[in-house]
Amino acid sequence: MSRDISVVPVKLNLANVTDEEAARVGLQPVRDWRAFGLQGYPGFLVISNPFLSGSQSFWVRQCLKTYPQKPNICNLDMHMSPSDTQDIWGKSLQSLSHPPSGRKEPKTLLEKLRWVTLGYHYNWETKTYSANHHTAFPADLHLLSLKISAACGFPGFQAEAGILNYYRSDSSLGIHVDESELDHSRPLLSLSFGQSAIFLLGGTQRQDPPVAMYMHSGDVMVMSGHSRLLYHAVPRIVPPPGGQSMLDKEGCSLSPSLHNNTVVEQVSEPDWTVCSRYIQSSRVNVTVRQVLGPGQCFPDSPSLSKRTNVEETDSYHDTPDREDMKRKRSGSTHSDSEQT
Ligand code: OGA
Ligand code: MN
Image (cartoon, rainbow, N blue to C red; front, top):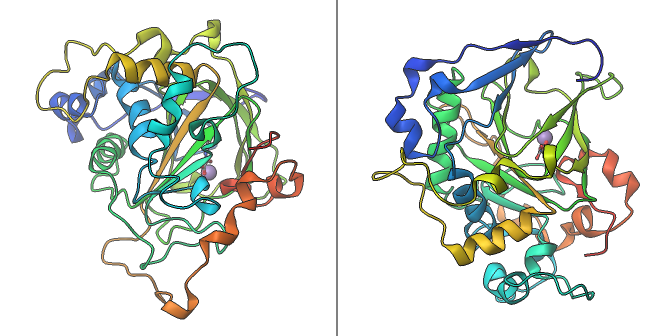
């Protein structure tokens, strides 16, 4: 932690989530979670890897193999046809299933993946969600989000929108506030997998000096209350402590406390080979948001004539060297120095 800001333990709500409910989504009993807050940042919370051993591999497999599939939307859809982005995983397998040859190989679609949106699909151009741009939110990730937020004192959280960020070792995410959701009284959840990140938490003004911290694989960050609308950024992806992430250390064999009645499935060896190769150099960040308050509707559901043209939004993510974009809500505009 930079500057002198105290890290304080945070008490979670043990009564809201049973051990069985936690295990169903691959989480340890809530009493075993280590949750920390920062003095002066009420509502900001980091839970240091609450996952059961082996279960991170399932969530990573979902992020790499399942969530990029239609009807979800990804950056590659901005300049490729749906048939070409239909099977990103399948089309990348060949080259990711064997160790790197040492020669320069063309990038696979999986390596070109930068973001996926779920539920209410975030429109990067208008920075809004809308009623007519929605597909079903994945039930497994909804349940995971429900349990995490309940343990943090927010029962009944509705996971309505997800933005998944795929970072290569030279990716960054510019300073931004996540304010497009209509109800800011609900928390924003952020899950980290794979390589570590340096996370900067700022203040309510862009120029407020930030505090820096690491996000490691398995860590869960919650921004709520006073901290829900603070500026933040990810300037750098860094190797995990000791060179190996928890995800990597644990692999895909599930903890014995995970048996029946769970949404967390055993990841097959061939799938794990691809996932583990991918996360050797990459980080996956899952952010989950409730967009609407209970009973709330979009104020002015965009009419068909106002419908946004997703084809025009690719430059936010794909254009290299857009220093300018890094500074806007690049939030969404997670930049790369590398040509994709
Ligand atoms: C975001 C975000 C942070 C991270 O997607 O809005 O801030 O840790 N992600 O990658
Ligand atoms: Mn954010």
